[in-house]
Length: 203
Image (tube, rainbow, N blue to C red; front, side, top):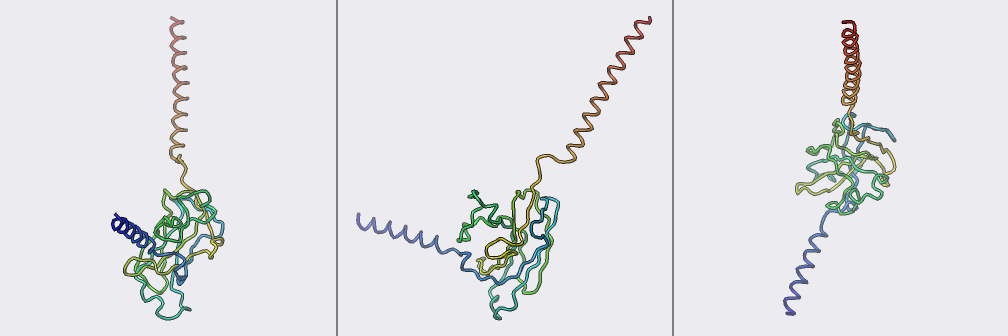
């Protein structure tokens, strides 16, 4: 029994150790320069507006720092103000559990020089305040570095996205046209009935 209990305890400890070996955000070096077109406080519309993103390696760092970089992934991330009381957007140091950056914008092979893309905000993007972050991945698909459009406290260069409402302009126009047609049809019906009644009285 004692041996069995020891084996179970050893297995549990091994599982805990394995689960704690994930990449942490605090372990990453900020080596990428990331810029985006939205200005501080700008309000953009989901499904309509576009964001231009530019990223590059910070050449002031020691040569070879980026030697393991293979892929760059740029993501749309929630700002702290839009994470309050929302556990499904919570920032966690363990990147496997982190919910800050849930919207992938692009994934491209790494290049130290400037790279630029223009991205249309997806229609299902929720209303919130955002910033952009780029992660560098190694050949094992592990995060090894990052860059972002905001400061370390995530308070600068933040912008807002307004989600698409449940109603669409074309539906509103169709509803107005249908209502107008119904009113005109009703008046036409009464006019015809009135003329019929008048004609029958004259006979």
